[in-house]
Image (cartoon, rainbow, N blue to C red; front, side, top):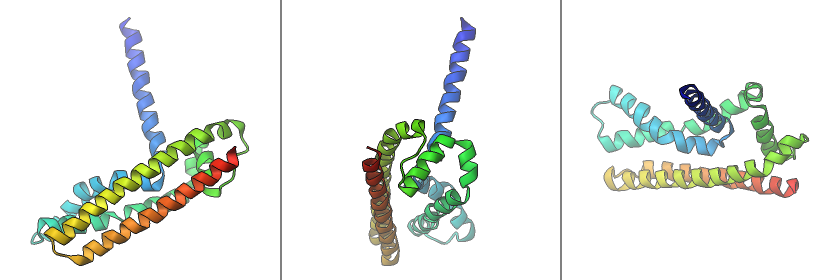
Length: 184
C-alpha cells in the first residue's frame, strides 16, 4: 500500500515538473516578462546596483534596477527565436503550436490541429494576464518615479515600456484571433 502511494506521489511530482517545463516552453514572451520582471529586479538588479553605488537612494535604486530588468523581454524574444531546433526537440507539439501561431498557418498534423483551440485560448488568457500585470507594474513604477523620486525621466521610460507591452499584446491577440478563425 505504501509503495503505491509513493509511486503516485512520484508520478504527481514528475507531472508538476513537466507542467512547469511545459509552461516555460509554451508561455508567450510577454507572460515570461511579467513573471520574471519583479523577481529579477529585486533579486538581481537591486543587489547589483547597490554593490556598485551604495549612495543611491532606495527609490532610485529600485527604478534603475527595474529599468535594467526590462531587457528581459527582448532577450527572451531573441533567445526563443535562436533556439528553435532545440525547442522542437524538447517539446515537439508545443513547437508546432508556437510555429502555427507565429506563422498564422493551421498545422497539418491532426493531433496538433486538435490541440490548437485550447492552446489559443490559453495564449489569449496568458497574454491578457501578462499585459495587465505589466501595466500594473509600470503604473507602480511611474508613480514611484513621479511621487517618491521626483524623476520624470524614469516615468517616461516606464510609460514607453507600458506602450510597447500594449503593442506586443495587441499584435499577439490579433495573431490569435486570425489563427482561431482559420482553424474553424
